[in-house]
Image 1 (cartoon, rainbow, N blue to C red):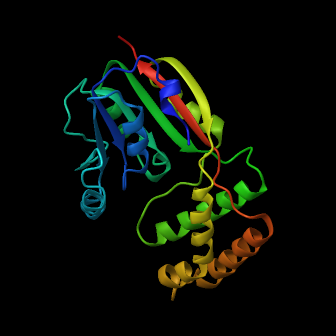
Image 2 (image 1 turned 90 degrees about the vertical axis):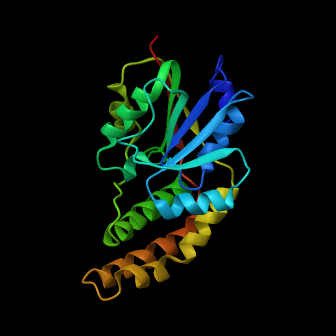
Length: 236
């Protein structure tokens, strides 16, 4: 896992925000990076997820809050750090969310985006990419929203419009225990198709694709795609 402290010299104690936090996976990484005495808030728009996160992670140092990332209730210049991790591709109007993150960030504060990218991945990571795109199709069938994974240069282009100073990028390759979770999900792909697509015109096509990805996984293995970490500061 990326040790964020190495990339955040001079970070002051204060409040940190993780947008689209789900169960706080990245928020806990932020909590490790923030100086003593800081608060970390995980924001998510799904009420059930927020309640489950509160129950699952009570007393672990992250405050879970229900809210819309495109219309936050926080005041201007509130946070020392504002972050979003592997969530941009789930958001239709991602520019609105990025603008809100910039608004609530204090001058001099850190703006951080962590996002998986599609290009330059090894064979096992390409299997993850195919699986991720396939899961996006199922998510859309169930009423969710998810774009195909962007290339690294596309992510940088999206973020480059923000007026950030001292921008730097690095890459994150997560711990191997994350790969085991991907393998477990791979084993369940056919069941996922049966759950989300049974009776639909796309069923047979999706079933064939699920089996094809499972066959590929057996041949190449599966490894989480490398992610781009984009860090900048709001000008003083």
